Amino acid sequence: MRARIVSEWWQVAGNPDLGAYSTPEQQPVDFAIWQAADGTWQLWSCIRHTACGGQTRLLYRWEGADLLGANWQPKGIAMEARVDLGETAGGLQAPHVIKEDGVYTMFYGDWQRICLARSEDGKSFERVLGKDGQPDLFSGPYENSRDPMVLKIDGVFYCYYMGHKEHAEPASAVFCRTSSDLLTWSDPVIVSAGGKAAGQTNWFGGDCECPFVIEMDGVYCLFRNQRYGVDNLNTQYCSPDPLDFGVDDDRFCVGTLPVAAPEIVENGGRTYIAALLPSLKGIRIAELEWND
Image 1: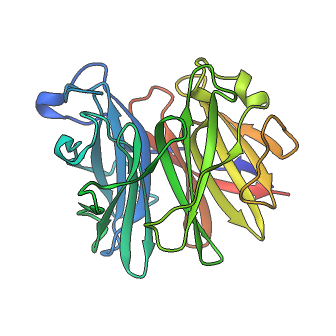
Image 2: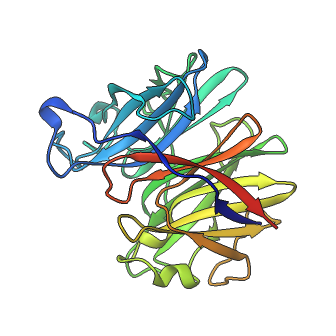
């Protein structure tokens, strides 16, 4: 299946006012969109290059009454790193939210680990602390484990994420771990790496960022990102196996889209794609269709 953008884009988020943390260089990047319990649409984005210290990243929130409406309302800083809980200062990255049994579960990166938070209303999240008193679920095997995305398949949760490691082979990869309870996770496997996408990025770890997987009639499509900005690029792979999209193998590659960090949203029987603005100063949405 090949994805095709079939509408004009509408902008839902811009470059927010962070108060004392604002800088001219700040950029909204990896994000998540979901519908809260009250029906409103929530958008949380990692804002990088801020003045919050450390790795310069925090999470910011917008709210919209309608997925199809433009210019959602800025709601302020949603979450900052908790160094006292083992998180890296300024290291929060790439949230992703699912709803299971009436509870909203958020997965996010803290610069080195994939972490967990939960919410009853889909707006206010609290970290879930493990036996060590920290919110981490797992990390590695590469550095900077980030960009988690979770898909439920036949009662099993699949968490896709990426990491990079200079001088490793491959230097960047999309990993997956599985779980039956969202707390205990399997060892990681590489599900996608290398191939032609590896030659279309401007740094050694940039070809496997922001993995996003959807299922359509028993076929799984992976969106794998290579570039941000005016020359943004994302490659799609479709496979019957959710744990194999090809490693140094392009047999599952079905096409590319000029987008960065896409999220796929289903609503009202239609499919939408959300992505970064090429200017890296906001987030936009368009309608998506699939061609066989």
